[in-house]
Image 1 (cartoon, rainbow, N blue to C red):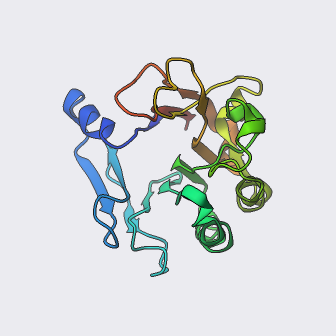
Image 2: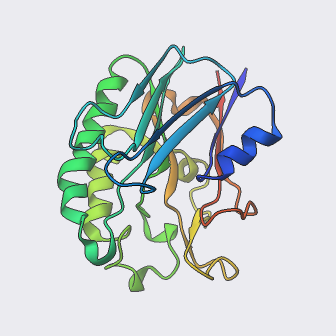
Image 3: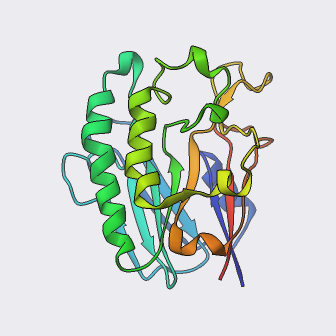
Length: 225
């Protein structure tokens, strides 16, 4: 049996629900700290065993950034990682507080069953994942601190970037700044990360760059279960 997982930008999810019937289970979270600031959502054909909002730390759970669904064979964690912001004003909060707290939460889940993390992780983890990397090293999402944090909190804890595993040399982006999409000057910020114990079940991991209703593109994952 194959399981198909998709990660959509905000707005595209509602369009998807309107186009394809049968996704009767849907779960939403949004920021209570600032209106229209951040949020996440998950829709599913299959009823999850359990649903959790946030990671259980009040400091991090005011912005609606994490929803976790437990299924029979794995946990699905949908995350919208905080952007370090203009002038990198939230960089220290992100790499010193949010990233390790989120990684600890995911690692704890993994002690029970495999975990798949999906969403906008706001980091182009390698030079291949961004257009013109030398010019972006001081930009939020590609600083040395963010990439090192990604490595420490995900790579070194055994989570696998499924797209890069499947397509080691492919240049594929999931986000484009204003007027940059036509020239494909983008970033790969959106991921499916999988526990090492489930990586052999990944049939494909891919990007849908031709879906243009957002500045992010949807991504997909196919699992063999």
